[in-house]
Length: 128
Image 1 (cartoon, rainbow, N blue to C red):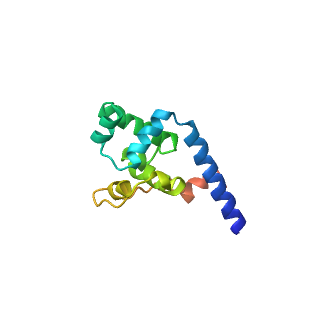
Image 2: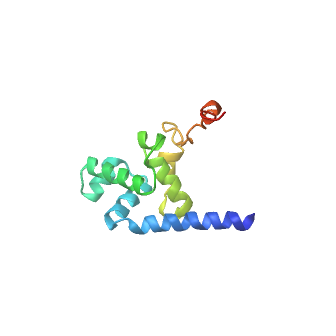
Image 3: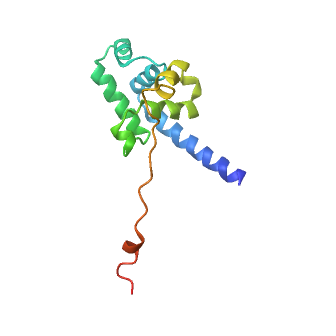
C-alpha cells in the first residue's frame, strides 16, 4: 500500500512540475508576488501592470493548475494556489501569503465537492 501511495504522490508531483514548466516567465513573476503575500495593488505596482491585468494572470494560472470549475471558479483562486504551492514548492510560499490567504478569517476554506451520485431509480430506468 505504501508503494501505491508513493506512486500516486510521485505522479501528482510530476503533473504539477509539468504544468509549472509550461508557465511563462511573466506568469512565474506574478506567482512570486502572490506567494509573497502582496496585495493586488502592491503586486501590480511591483510588476508595472494594471490591477485588472494582475488579476487576469492569477485567473489564468489557476486555470492552468485545474481550478476551472466548481466552487473554485466562483471564488477566489488565491487560497487554492497558495495551498498547492505550499505542498509542491514550499520554498516559494511566504508566511505572509499563508496568513493572508490560508489562515485569514475573511476567507472560507476552498472545498470542491464531487458531483452527486446518480439516483437509484434513474439507474434502473429501462430495466425490467
